[in-house]
Amino acid sequence: MRELLKKRILFFGGKGGVGKTTCASAMALVASRAGKRVLLVSTDPAHSTSDIFEKPFDRDEREIYPGLTGLELDADLEARRYVDRAKAEITRMFSPAVAKEAERQIDLAAAMPGVEEVALFDRMSDLIIDRFDAYDLLIFDTAPTGHTLRLLRMPELVASWIGALSKRRRALLSLNQDIDKVRRSPEAIDPDQDPILRTLDQRREKLEQVRARLMQHNFTGFVLVLVPERLPIEETSRAAEVLRESNVNVCGIFVNRVLPDEVEGEFYRARWAQEQVYRDEIRRRFSAYPLTWIPQLETDVYGLDNLERVSALLTR
Ligand SMILES: Nc1ncnc2c1ncn2[C@@H]1O[C@H](COP(=O)(O)OP(=O)(O)OP(=O)(O)O)[C@@H](O)[C@H]1O
Ligand SMILES: [Mg+2]
Image (cartoon, rainbow, N blue to C red; front, side, top):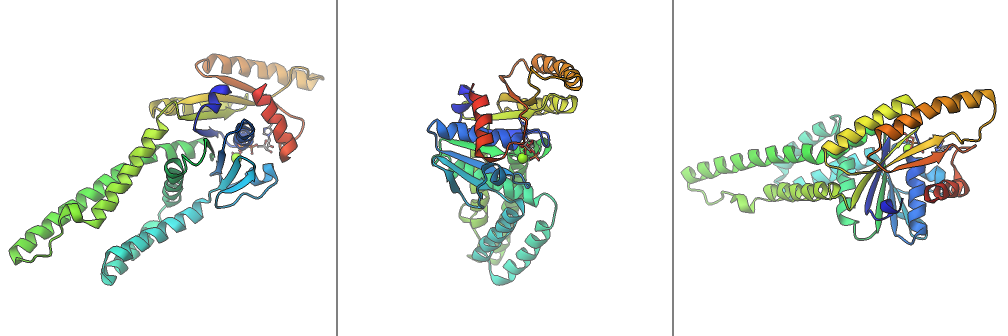
């Protein structure tokens, strides 16, 4: 736990419903109580952070408690912002006729699946780069695993798109230069002065910065949350493998909703016994990672009092 508090960026990931939001929120509370300036970012469309804290989170950063700022990202809204920004950039750079056609292309692209993810990733990148110094710790509560892992692969993917776009743009510029030479026109655009290439280069630089930061093990860590059951164990194992391949540090595994040892009654004893098998399996398969065990509480975790209980369990 103390190791987690040394990080600057933490992601909480795991299968649907295992307690990602609960754990990310409890962690945010622990860190802010330890005197850190924390930004808790919810990227999950279900947005249960507001419910847990019983305070409204906003689309913009808003202080929830002293030292704890919350932010809910909405993928649809981010996609719209992203598209509007792209259009504004195009209008600035081109003549109205060209801009009109480009806008049509953007509208088409905006309707394709995946735009929300790209836009969400863009906003997270902005936070990771531009808001890094404003906080001691950024905590991302993410959507279920598959989504998040794709998100982490995004820099690679987007970088290759940008590479392809830059290449086409350069080819076009050099073609124009050749034509202009024939026509003896002085209007040829020097690739070094081209606003489009410059924008593409800036984006690539930003992506590289994000990628580097995600892979910096002393700064960034991924916490995988699971419950002691078969499917979550398998999913966690796969996720840990993918993260390792992507060179992202898995800095902890939270085993949530563990039955307390003092359970009574035949039904619970049987469940408890079954759970021991999974607990052993977790200890065996994830021995390379720091494990944190969080007991099943008798109620859902809503409201500050309950969250405090989970925070206390995290720090015991
Ligand atoms: N240790 C616990 N004891 C009791 N209830 C818990 C515990 N951890 C989480 N819960 C409850 O389980 C439910 C799911 O938790 P949570 O919303 O944190 O999961 P999630 O992984 O974020 O889900 P999703 O994938 O939908 O975002 C919530 O109702 C929460 O209050
Ligand atoms: Mg959640």
